[in-house]
Amino acid sequence: MAKCQICNKRAQTGNKRSHSNIATKRKFKVNIQTKKIDGVKKKVCTACIRTMNKVK
Image (cartoon, one colour):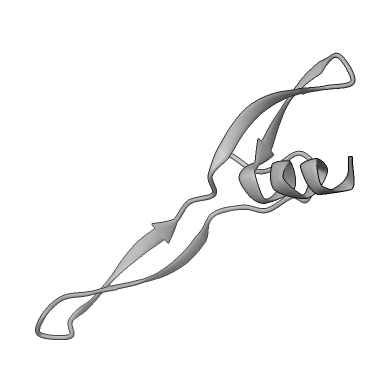
């Protein structure tokens, strides 16, 4: 399963709701991007990328 290598954020589970309010399981996946940090490629979520840009 994909997760952020900085904050360890993973996919969450929840319910998809149809028009008749029937619940079926679904996953809320994390937006993972590959980014080179200090010369090493890492899988990082976009929230961490935005935070890293703020700190600079």
